[in-house]
Amino acid sequence: MINMVSVKLVNVIKRFGEVIAADHVNLNIKDGEFFTLLGPSGCGKTTTLRIIAGFYHPDNGSVFFDDEDVTNLQPEKRQTGMVFQNYALWPHMKVSENVAYGLKVRKISRNEIKERVTRILDLVQLQGMENRTPFQLSGGQQQRVALARALVIEPKVLLLDEPLSNLDAKLRLEMRREIIQIQKKLGITTIYVTHDQEEALSVSDRIAIQHHGSIQQVASPKEIYDRPKNAFIADFIGQCNFFPGTIEKVNKYVTVATDVEERLRTLKYDDVKIGDRVICVVRPENFSLNKPTKEFNVVECEITSVIFIGKSNRIYGKIGDMTVLAEIPTDVTVEPGERLSLYASIDETTVLPITS
Ligand SMILES: Nc1ncnc2c1ncn2[C@@H]1O[C@H](COP(=O)(O)OP(=O)(O)O)[C@@H](O)[C@H]1O
Ligand SMILES: [Mg+2]
Image 1 (tube, rainbow, N blue to C red):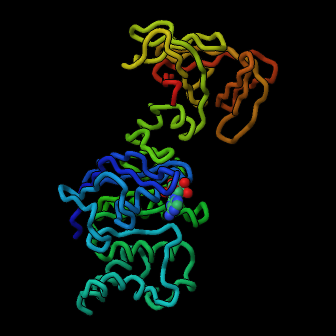
Image 2 (image 1 turned 30 degrees about the vertical axis):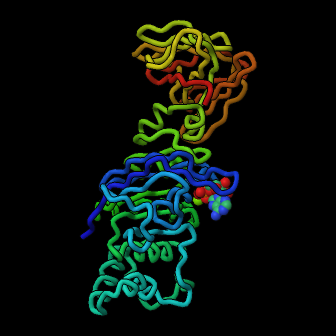
């Protein structure tokens, strides 16, 4: 039903006065991919999405749908369907009229409009709601109308700008699953914008991390989580322990003499050399109290507090003036004041350049 496209941004720049909202953005989004732009508020996600939709013209660079340069094409000629953060439904129109609007504008016949509206309302599970107006609907139902309105025109690309941010936590999870299901069913190229890292990790085929307008890393969720390219990403995607230090040796592993006088080894990276200042990163859940079977690093700390968080205990420890954070099983009894050895396998320890 839907003829999808790949989307390419080449060197796209967009300024608002002094602010560079999109800074040399290069992206290659594949046919049928669920692609997410993730970053903190104000990093340029909406701007980038609006450039793809054609609502903003970039100051520099080009946008391609497959091989077609659409940079100067009007939004309505691009065949994108957009869901806005606040849904932007027409309050005085019924659900069916909201959904039918884009088809009317395109001069589709009345019979076909009726048939397509019915089909799409089935898809988003809004059968029987045709005659309600938006304020007679819950937040989740309004969200579905916005999705139906975007999908009914059979767009080549579906653009979703923080579509779940106005919903409560439980509904957000439910709608998240539904959006994934609909996307997979239609196979439509989808560009999803969110500031919620957990949401991005759980819905996406690939994620682009944006910061101050520029794209920092594009990778699968697992790769972003396991191999963040810089300290900003590591910190943004879940909690991390950062050990600043200097590279002491590079062979099979990179050995870092950390400033807290622990030595940490990590897997070899291409672009580091002896003497470089770096940061070693270990996630709290990657520490264990038992020596891993693989080669490992060990960090010795003094426990300062133990906090029960349900699935595990969160341990805060001190090494010199640095605080380390570890998650350990709740059946292990440890007390503040005790010394503790924390182990992390070498392939769960990452080294990052310090400049970023
Ligand atoms: N129409 C506009 N006029 C002026 N500044 C804008 C406009 N739109 C966005 N900006 C600025 O550009 C930056 C990126 O904004 P935006 O793309 O909305 O970020 P995000 O969607 O990631 O929160 C912000 O600093 C924002 O204030
Ligand atoms: Mg935004």
